Length: 250
Image 1 (cartoon, rainbow, N blue to C red):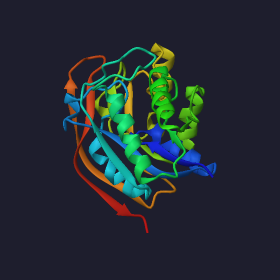
Image 2: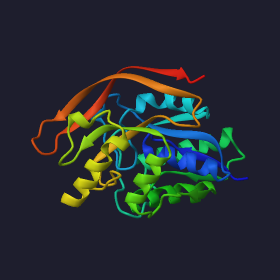
Image 3: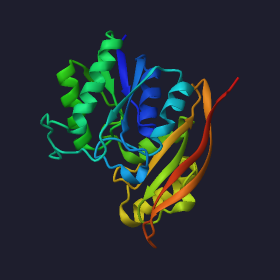
């Protein structure tokens, strides 16, 4: 059996990847989350890591009942932005490398690393760079899959996926907190109208998973919506958590 560390953003792709691999006999021994150094979503910018709802990650790991290691990266530290990554001092990818090394010190049986990359060569190349340096296999089951197929698979998995940030024409504050299933038809329309990615690969939206069939607990949140950029066509809005709890499903 392969033993894997999963990169966890909290979004639909990373969580669905974990569920998918578990169903196919892969042991997810640890979750690794790269946490931004600045607490406010509006202060964070990363080419590699999702920062929306990063404060909810420990609750998600508890709900999934998998050990979590949080490793901080400096906000706005995407220094080497060429497609092919070269190890660069103070780049956020070096924080990922150090985080993986910490995981391997605590879980030496781990032989692979997974993430939810679908179409980003930028992300895939960086994961491969870190994996090669750490002697790990890379598992990316969603890589280059048809995006509409991925959308359907995630909805059919019965994960409770909700939009937590929007930044695209046709999306607005009213979409924050809606489930992926509720948003499906709208996302398909926007794809047809303007080519928007139905799974948010172009940064159109970010999501977070609040429950799943295999979870031991579910997340319950009270939130409001912050509009970072007012715009008639493509406002930037995100979920601001006021309170969050893990609820035992038994």
